[in-house]
Structures are given as structure tokens and as C-alpha cells.
Image (cartoon, rainbow, N blue to C red; front, side):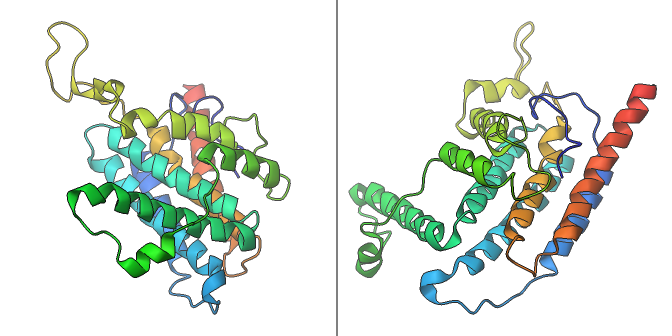
Length: 269
């Protein structure tokens, strides 16, 4: 599925990619296909709603991919797209980790959400702002915790490549952990307001005028969106017949094929 993707750091490659109109069209059609599977009802007991949460996560990823395409055509710099790509990647990782063992990991996924709510509630207490009601506060007490994102990628690399054709083994730049380094860690500069994220806004030469001086237009940031959605869909599709895995693969391979054709044309000069 990702075999045609460029080697090395996905955020620093110079490999030709589909044009912006091509990539936007492919992703629009891809998202439309996924959304055509909804609305959908899942008849699950409240304690085991993992299919409901999985479907919601896939739809959220569709929204993020749409937003990434808006940034691709309208943003002055790529910094906001880096932030969105990191969120898209983390959603794919969390979902893929939950799907290793849905019945066990789903409860940890819910528990982590409860812990996050409790953290916000406790932080707001000094400001006399009630975030959770007493009933909600009782609900979140003692909640379980998910592993770190990096640990989830290690577990996903150990579990999924042997089961899903096209996923890379650990050690490859496009494995779950490889993308953790090249996407999640690298984009943290933009997420956390590092001084490095300010470079597009000033010229490092001369008197340092502040402006939109450097537009790098790194297409790999936008080209990775569909493969990340594709990974989540194909992993989820192993036990869910309503996910059309063959069509998902065709969309991801279609984007990869366009990249390959542009690479070949560039090589011929």
C-alpha cells in the first residue's frame, strides 16, 4: 500500500508528487467513499462500543484530511498543516493500537479520555470554573491509562505488518514507529511553538524583515494524509465487512501511482 512512497524522512524529501489539483481530487473522492458508508448503526452494549468509536475516529480522520486539503490550497506556510498532520497521524496510531485487541484496549482508550477530562477539571479548579459535574467527576475517578504514543507504535509494528499486506516492518521510515519519528516528533516543533516554527515568517539574511518570506510548499505533508487514513481503514477493515478494503487500497495506490509517474517524468527530464 505504501511501497511507492519515498524513502527517508517524509518531511524533507524532494520526490515529485501529484499536483495540488490531482491530490485534492483523489482525496476528495477517497473521503466521499468513506462517508458513503455512513450513517451506520452499531448494536453494541455500552461497555463494548468499540465499533462505534472506531467508526467515529475514521470520520474524524476524514474531516482532518479535508482540512489538510484546504490548507494545501490556502495557507501561506506549511506550519499549520504540520500541526494537523500530527493529529491525523496520532489518531491513526491510537486507532490501530486499539484494534490490536479491541475488547481489552477499548476500555483503556475510554479510560484515557476520562483521565484527560479529570486533568482539565483539576487545572480549572483554582479559577473556580466547574468543568465536570459531581456525577461526571465520580465517573472519571480511577480511570485507566493508555501507553505513550511511541509505545503504541512499537506494539502496532509488532502486530500489524504480519497481518496487513503493504504495511512496513519496524525499521522502515514508513512503519508506525518510523512515522512517529518523521511525522509526530518532527512536527512537534510547529505544535509546541518552537522558535524553529517561526522561520517561514522572517528572512534569515540581512536585517531580518518579518514577513511571509519563505514558503517551502512541502507536498509530502499533504501527500501523507490519504495513506494515514488508508492505514487506519485497512487495519479496521480486517474484522469489519462494511469497510471495502479493496477500494481503500485502490485509492491509496492511485495516489502512489501518480507520484511514481511524476517521478519517472522528472527523471526523463
